[in-house]
Amino acid sequence: MDIWTRRIHNPYILGGSVAASYLAFYTAFDKKTKTLQLSNVIDLFLCRRGLDWSLVEANKALSLSGLTTMMIAFLPEFERSRKELLWMSMLTLWGHSTYSYYKFYQFDYRKILSEKIVKKGSLLLGAAANFALAAGYFEQLSVAVLAVSTTVLGVAHFYTMEIDYKYVLQVRPFAYLPFPLAGWVIYKYVADYLDNKL
Image 1 (tube, one colour):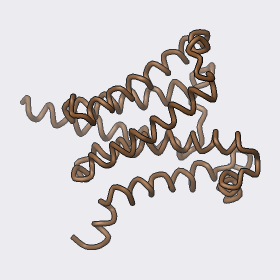
Image 2 (cartoon, rainbow, N blue to C red; image 1 turned 90 degrees about the vertical axis):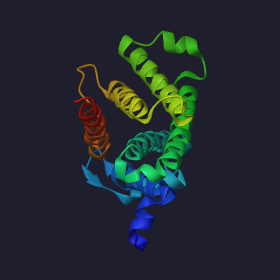
Image 3 (cartoon, helix red, strand yellow; image 1 turned 45 degrees about the horizontal axis):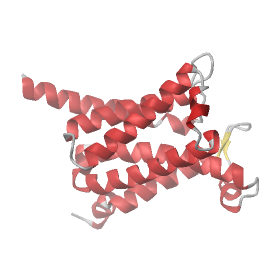
């Protein structure tokens, strides 16, 4: 195994690269000019648009990074790093969930109850995804069940959280990355299941 292969399979380098990619291609994307603007990333780190803006933007990148890292962990190529990648993903998504619960609901569950049905459903999907991820990490679920359940629940949460009233997804282009990745993960595990059954 050469040095580049070792680096690619190093879970910490991989997880950091995923996070950096969302900063470079998601946070940096300017909705007005439809171009990548380094100033957006600088604004985030220096809080030039205020601490609240920086925290909200960081939370968005954090959620996408956690979701993507989780799905990468299920690919056969990263089986040796799976445990570490899932741990990083779990911590990232817990951080995202905690901050979001504080930011949007001030830790008051009654505010969730007043949300529209789609938003409530999205929150339930996210909670179920976090629960399944933790259960799988502690080996209470098989890898296949863990992969398919967390991928479906996680991507469904993301989609339902980000759609508008016309059910159109309103996200920056790089945020579409989880969808083909989810399709590949589900295909791999369903295909393996069918191969073993036939």
